[in-house]
Image 1: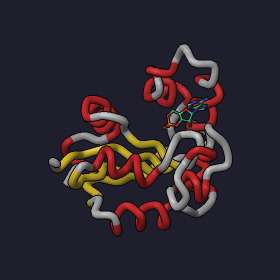
Image 2: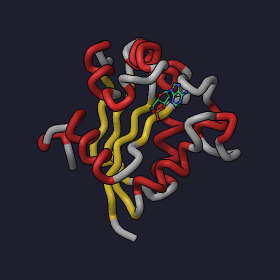
Image 3: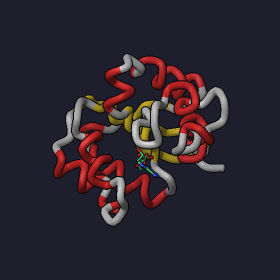
Image 4: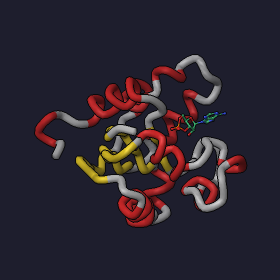
Length: 139
Ligand code: CMP
């Protein structure tokens, strides 16, 4: 067990549904500390860059349209096993397979519009944190 950092995004559907407070409450009550936070709207090009690993997938164009369709809230989370903890709180990518009580099981409306994104491994977390936050924005 180690203290880790991970990146979370409350996606445009989560922001539009008024779930910013609910999602942040779930992070904080489960021991994840917020080290950075901002609300932004990604351009299509920025969404394409963030999700470049998926560029060959059939859902890439739709996903990057969706992710640039409205504001998102980006958070740097820190805590014991933060990457796995965040993934547990989110639930499976496909909300129909997510454990009851997870964010996606409770609120997602499709495999694409699944409320939150979270880093999947330590190297990805470092890349994703650096994509959104510079050293002046982190506490
Ligand atoms: P996220 O965890 O942000 O990582 C990639 C995103 O692609 C995923 O959540 C979904 O929003 C989106 N997506 C759309 N279709 C699929 C799919 N068939 N499989 C996985 N991810 C998908």
